[in-house]
Length: 463
Image 1 (cartoon, rainbow, N blue to C red):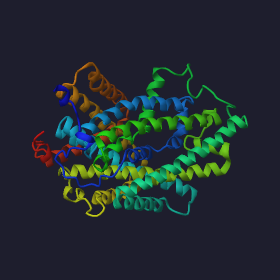
Image 2: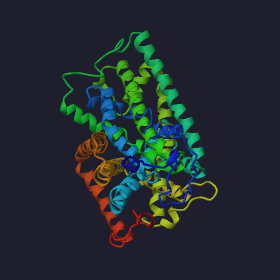
Image 3: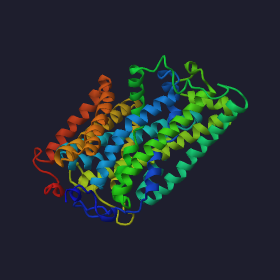
C-alpha cells in the first residue's frame, strides 16, 4: 500500500489534469523534445565563446564542458523528478508553486520570465551584429526585425511547425559541425598539422587542474548549458509527458555536452597555441586555418542561423508557454490577454506576439551586457529554488526517506543547489543590482495580484 502511494503520474503515462482544461495540442514525442532541447542549447554554441573560454581554462575547453555536464546533471535530474510529478506547462513556476509554496512559485516564475523574455532579444542582437559585420550596408536592426518576424510566425502558427523547423535547423547545425570535424581530421591526422595527432593537453594538465580551476570551469560551463530546462515548458503539448519530458531533459544535456567536448577538442588539436586566439573570433579563425575561407564563412553563417533562428525560436516558444501558464492562473498584468489560446492553431498566440514585440524593444534598446546580467541571474535563481523544491516536496512533505530515496531527493538536489549557489554567489555587483531590482518588482506585482499574498490560484486551493 505504501508503494502505491509513491507512484507518480497516472496509468499508461497519461497526465493528470491538475485542475486545468487541456487547451494545447498534445502531439510532441520524445524525439521532438530531444531536438528542441538540443536546439535550445545549440550544438555549435562553443564556437562563439571558444577564444574566451580557452584562455580562461589554459586550453582545456573540453574539460570545462565535462565539468559542465557533471555540474548541471543534478539540476536536470531535479527537472526530471518534478516533470513526472507535475506534467503541466510552466516549468519551474509550476513545480515550485505546487511542490514548495504558491507564492514562492510565482516569484520563481517571475525570475525565469526575465531569463526567457530577454534570451531571444540577446540572440537577435548577436545575430544582427554578426550579419551587419558581413553586410555593413544593411543595418543590424533590419536583421533583428527579420528574425523576430520569422520566429513569431512559426511559433504562433503551431507547435508542429516549430518542431519541423527545429528538425531542419538542427540538421543544418550538425552537418556544419561534421564538415568542420572532417576538415579538422584531415588537417591534424592526414596533413600532420597543428598538434599532429591526439593530445592530452586539451583534456588534462596536472599543473593547472586544482580547486581554483574547477571553480572557474564550473562558472563558465553552467552558464553555457542554460536552455536544457526549456523542455519542461512543453509538457502540455507532449504525449506521455510523465515519461518523456524528464528523459529528454537529461538526454539533451548529456548529448550536447559530449558534442561540445568533441568540437572543442578538435579545435584544440588544430591550434594548440590558445594564448594567441582572438577572444571573439577564435574558433572561426581556427576553422579558416583548417578549411580556408569556405569553412570560416560557412560557420559564421550557420552560427547566425543557430542563434537568430533556431535558438531564438526555441526560447520564444518556451517563454510564451510560461506566460500562458502564469496568465491562466491570473497572476500577471494583462492575464486575460496573455492567457488566450488560438482556437485554430492551439498555441498561446497572444503571448507569442507579445514576446515578439518585447524582443524588438529589448534587442534594440538594451545593451547586450545588461541582457546577459538579467538572463544569468534569473535562470540560476530559479534553478536554486527548483532544487530546494525537490528536497522539500519529496523528502520533507512526502517523507520519501529510504536509502535510495534519500540519494534521489536529499543528496542529489542539495548538491545541485550548492553548485548553482556557488556560481550565483560569484556574480558582480551590477548583476545583483539588476536581478534584485527585478525581484522587487515581482514581489510588488505578486502582492497586488494575490491581495497581500493571501489568495492562491483556483486550481491550488485544494492542494
